[in-house]
Length: 484
Image (cartoon, rainbow, N blue to C red):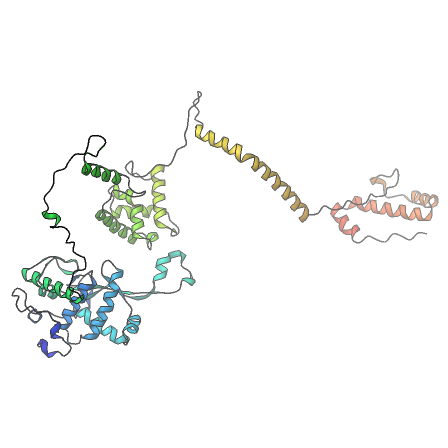
């Protein structure tokens, strides 16, 4: 490898001066090979440890670039690292998304230049892939069965993790325990402590005034740690406070007993372990995918309290018949666990799931168990308050229905009274020839015509039903015969 001074883009004044520190030599004295293998640029296979703070990431990038480990890395690489550092604040794990188009617009570069300098950072062991981007619509996975065309399209972004190469940790005099992404810093060497103090002083001078941020209280002669402990004094007997410290401890204990609604006695580590188990359950159960891991872990707490593993929980959820993805997975899981435990289909230790409220019951002399006094009082109150109004509403509804039915189906007008021949019956409406001749001779001309018309109408009514008569004789009545 060529000397550091041969690289034009390297600023020698910015490199830390570690020549006086023997345990930690200069950057050129540490052997480092670029990570050319693409398979070694993943989070699971990288040799660098995880970084969570943007300040540490920028320090590592500046050291690796200015040390000349990569000949093509320079100022543009540092600018890209600064953009990545601003995005690290969004994640507690130090992960940040990578969008070539947005980054190119922000830095005023071409997409190819952004890709190249991101590759330089990967080869230096400063970033690694957490998730590769794809054209898959991430909104489909987020909404699940509720996805619509109006939600649009959003591709899966590429996620990077900020890393600290081992050569940087060795140059800074840090003790590292473990290998790869999960390695942790356990301390510093004596030389590393001197270097850390120098870096802290440099940062304090760069803030401007050279004074620490927190003001120092000079009113007290000494720090509380070296103060002489004073004996506790008892107050007056007439109502004074005897032991303030003990009373404060009792108050704190009493306040801790009254926790918020829904809180448990789980520690943060146990809750994190439950979330990790719930993440595996979500991965192996199709209808829980896309839900919130924290809410799912809270819904599965009865199973975790019973000592179940994620395999047993996933096997139990697989037995449930869920045809469609629930709208709120955690609420469904919590209610279903409670229902199955109270129904006897799921066996968990007592006290983990709250039972359903049972109505108050009392026993009569004959052994029957009617509802208790509370239920009877409730029914009395309802009868006194709502039953009268309910009866009035029912009567009004019945009258409204009657009026609506009458308006939709108006009553048919009654037909006019039919003129019948005195003494005539429906079975002898067909007159014989002698009766017809005598009727014509003995009746005036107009009356005879009207009588014949009445006889014909009565005969037709006898043969036809009511509906046919209304359609035939009311709308198209035949013309009466002309009088003779």
